[in-house]
Length: 267
Image 1: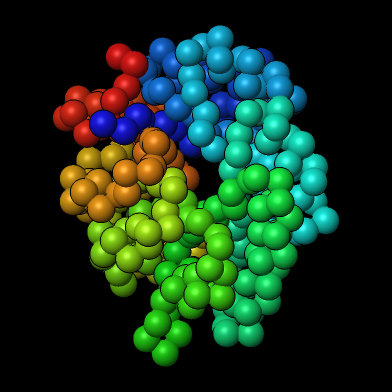
Image 2: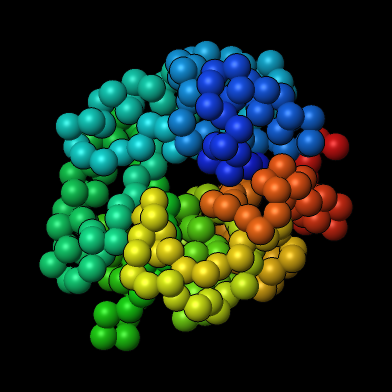
């Protein structure tokens, strides 16, 4: 059984200071989550953060801090990952980087340049998606085109966003990208939404989408998990926002996943 993890971006509203963030980490550990994935260290150094979660009995298999953007930034990222005892680096892009074929080619060129640097340092580069990569050009998924241009990059599939507001079956998307998937993000909510317009917020198309605790939306979690490859060490729960209080959402997601024997927790 895979471990249950939490992307700490979910609790960003409670992490304004270093002391706030420390309190958040203690509460996450008390709920029973086994793994955390930070998205901002909130004044912890990379080494301090790793030591702090070690003391709480938490593990970390990946991080969104630091985030790889450009080849010239890679050495600093390699150094920080060493302080965290990690061998994986994350990258990701915005909607303009996937808007057409020319943009996808430029994005792939940037990724391949970073891949070369990270590979020499023994670091695996993986990419995190939102919904826009799962739009289509001439009937083909943009992410599938990109994957062909970047054969060395691995994926952290965000299963919910891969449905692209009802355009795709996330279980099929997981099956399609499973051979190169090393990490998974899990959230839940309805798939088909009423658009608010083509406005992106933090790289996500802003639509009327009521994200909710895992197990309370349209995601077929059991079918999805059947497609997750064996090499994935933990499923990382992430809520960009929620119709419920975020702590309640985090706790109810844990109760559903661990209580139904789908993932392993510490409580």
